[in-house]
Amino acid sequence: MLWLLRHAQAADGRPDEARPLTEEGLRDARAIGLSLSRMGVRLDHCLASPKRRAQQTAQLACAPLGVEVITERALAGPAFDAERLAAGLGETLLVGHNPVISGAVRELTGARVHLRPGGLAAVERGELVMLMTTEQCRAMAATVEAAA
Image 1 (cartoon, rainbow, N blue to C red):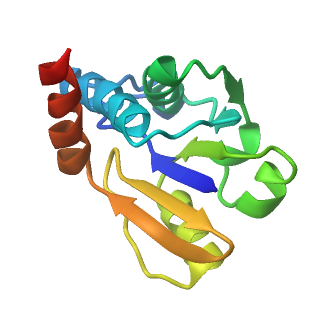
Image 2 (cartoon, rainbow, N blue to C red; image 1 turned 180 degrees about the horizontal axis):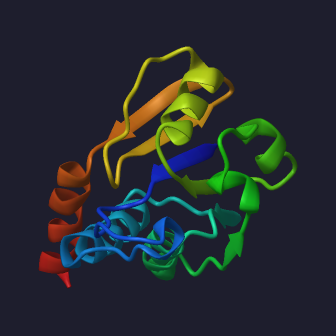
Image 3 (spheres, helix red, strand yellow; image 1 turned 60 degrees about the vertical axis):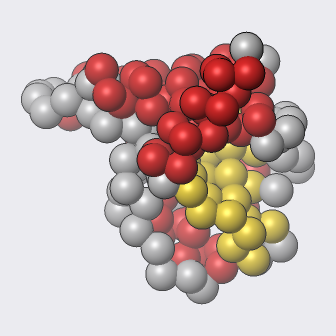
């Protein structure tokens, strides 16, 4: 399974690569990780854009899964080949930016999607098998936290 995640909500500012997550973005990134954990996702790898907001999102989302984040410069660029990046890595999460992360979902599946900040997609053998918003991740994370 290949997971594609758009970074969570980021603050405005310059330089672009240094923009951090907002408080809401930090909460959402944690909720994404709890959601993935709740769904029983077992990631082998996480590759993230070197931009600060993507790194923060990846670190917080992968913490509950015990997965180390690897910086992948291609995820910051104008385009990337998701299949090539994830080739041979097993279950992988790619964390990047729009419009290229949504474009990768389209390229892999043919589905026209627009991932909002914190939006998550799962693709398996060219099929879009799941699409989640931050609101759905927050709701799922709330059930995990309530059970704790």
